[in-house]
Length: 176
Image 1 (cartoon, rainbow, N blue to C red):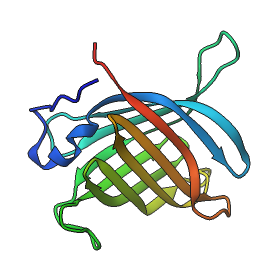
Image 2 (cartoon, helix red, strand yellow):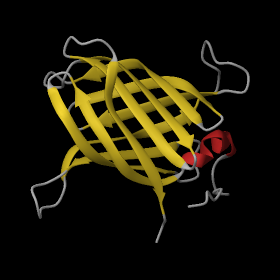
Image 3 (cartoon, rainbow, N blue to C red):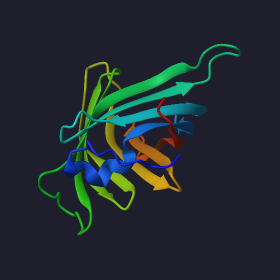
Image 4 (cartoon, rainbow, N blue to C red):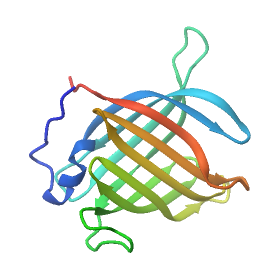
């Protein structure tokens, strides 16, 4: 599906314009203590004209034969261009700040950069409720590869070092 530029997007978000829309596709979830599981993911980037993108993601695992898929995880949040470049941002890169929350009791703040159809994010702060799983670090990479959204999320959790947790290849979904 061809990318259509949304002319109502705030100008500071132009470096992220390629993300706007609904994306869906297949992926793999695997981490120490979690068996390898094939998943389906849907990600929505949208906006209301403000200087930020709204973000919503849902990961589904297959239900029993003939049953609907089961929600594995969800998260919501906001992406914005930082008013000042973060340390280490190179010329031509756009400095980002991302805030994500999930119903498992965790809020994460990421900083990173966007450039040439790629976004790299690293956790700056991860806060959790007393019952939320302890995740000490996280990174994410989103890339536009031949029009698809490639996505990798790595975490350091449960005493394990930072390593891949989930990845997916998503295609843009046509709006009806």
